[in-house]
Image (cartoon, rainbow, N blue to C red; front, side):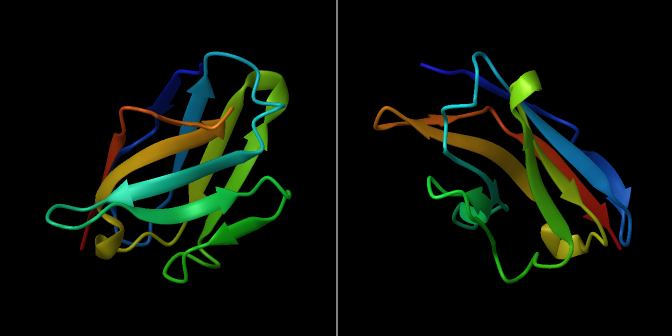
Length: 115
């Protein structure tokens, strides 16, 4: 099992930056499939960025070149650096991990981008 806790959300003006953190309750060095998702009001949850079990990182087209997903295994933490934020990035952002065939989610952190 692993618990995930996100932080770093908030209110920011368009063009600004935020860095989200996802702290895991145990080592993430053996969790090869991690990602960030987001859900805007009235919309389905969508993938933002993902590190696959093969080690490659992929991004939604809407965030490519603006968002960067990284991880620090020594700190059991994954990050999502978000630059050049747009109002359409407003959503609740969730951290996800898949381990042992199970899916784990954090509670989410709200990101609001004002125009």
